[in-house]
Image (tube, rainbow, N blue to C red; front, side, top):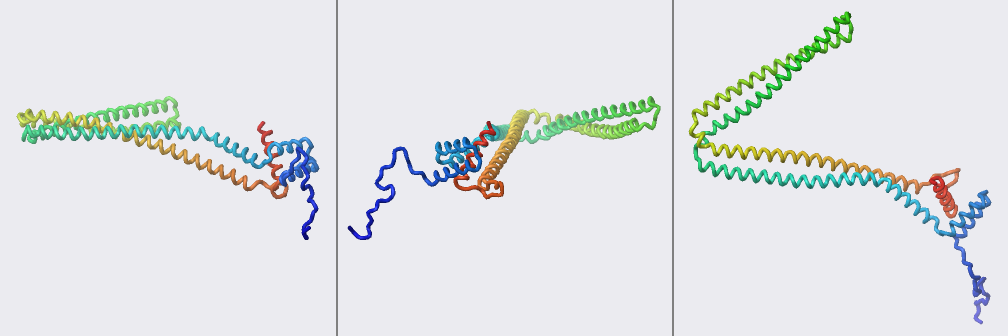
Length: 339
């Protein structure tokens, strides 16, 4: 026998363990101690046994709580899904509409440039064939253009004058009604009728000024229109031959001008529509950003609450098995409340 070596067998060494028994881990011992502590502190035996059964079914209560909390967070996020989905649909619709309108806008601009190029080429070719008669006849066609614009301004001035006359007539009727009301009431100091009469008188004066101004404007534009017509007739007599010879050129130019004006109007409309839809896209994007910020803030609050649990009863936050027990109790209370 070698010195320093003991032949004593350690406790339990070399002895078979009874079937069905296993060693308890420190965590399980702590949980058993916590169950005993709960029984001694007045918790009913059934509740303590239920907690014990829960621990036996799942040895990791903390992971279970995390899973439940994660499911709760996911459930909370799912509640926000309809709002997010709605804004995403608005965003996708606006994006598709922008793409479609921008394609149409590119086509319209290309068509406008193509027609402009074609018109310049054909007009140059027509001008080369007709020669100097085009420049000689140009003052006549310019005078026709100015006469047409003067005629349009005359029509607008006539409408403004008719509107001013109608307003003046309506204001005078208001004055008549107010005066009749004062006479019928036999109380010339009634503040209601006095106020109505003053208001009607003010409207009459304003309408009279507008009528006079519109009448004067109508007379001026009518005179300009007449002068333009006289100049057209004078140039038509003086340039009769060159006007007739250059007529194909100016008719072709008028056709191209009308086509270009229509395409330009279409381009302007598409640009306005694109700008409007881009505004809707920006609004949907801002809404999504706001929702994202709200969710981020709520998640931060949840994490802060988890890191800093509420201190109750003047005691520090429980740790170890006691914390696990309280967490499970709180979890089941929440379930009972929800039920």
